[in-house]
Length: 388
Image 1 (cartoon, rainbow, N blue to C red):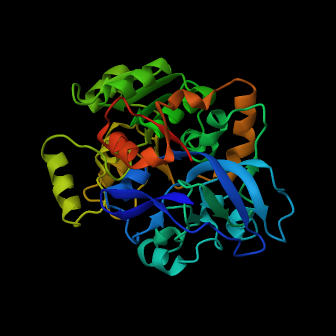
Image 2: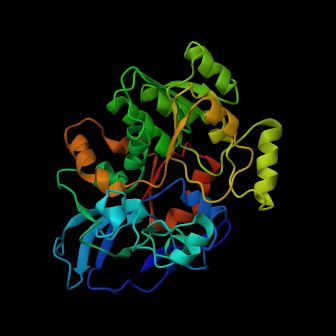
Image 3: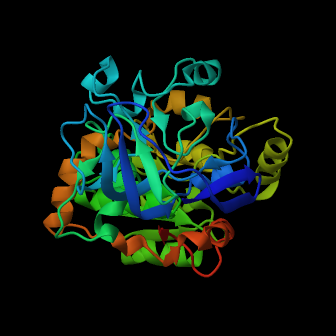
């Protein structure tokens, strides 16, 4: 089969690789009908996630048709159309039983690697380094899906691939980022980063009862999409974001600040240069400029929700501000399984059509160029869907 493989920093290629096989009686093989490039995939392209190996198959946002099942799979049959959550979960451990699916204790076969960096190992993730299990990803023609009775979610034939594909990651990720903040009504929500996750955080804030949503970015087409989604927008290259947020909230600050950028955040001035130099020389693995800004801007007693991916250590976080303002932090990989049914219902009811975020539809062979365009923000590229 054809698959997109990682070969080093800035080097991804579509290659012929062996077809996946059932390795466990609880496995299924899915023929991929749609897959997408995620913003966090760019961290792999840019070489900032450790333990990648040459030839690793990328991709964690995918859906398709079940073409083979193991002998112990009971809830799926050949021909079922499914979306597959990016975190892999066993369904039986303490964390799965407590609806904390991305923290599964049994799905990461490389747990010792993750424990070295994180203290404890999170769940395995498709196509996202050996730190997260070393699983082959879904930017391919076929994928082996472990724990097939737990993850894959059958979707209605009345909905198109483009309406349901983002249930695999970015729609639940944006939704969880807001939901965990427990909006009380009348809340002002500020979102740093208007990429795909930020766009879904904006949409989710309205679904969950926000009174105002303010979006911060620097890319014109992303800001325009946020504006079309009902947000007030701030271009941080033209306006000091913290001052603007104070003005927009009467000096109080947003009630909820959502960081939807992650470890490659763009900073301005000396702070931006500091982070870039330290990251390039592997002294500081992650650039936290947007997170610092969210902490400083959030109102006293407010909540900072981190949806952007962080993988290592960050410097100069304003913990004094966080402590003295009494901030609450929410963060983590998304518990996608928790949201599949309720968010599918919202799509069926017409409350949201997730396909709004798609700007590019391409074939799998176009994936290397699509990665570059997405990273470099060329051609108005916000979200790419690939059709293997």
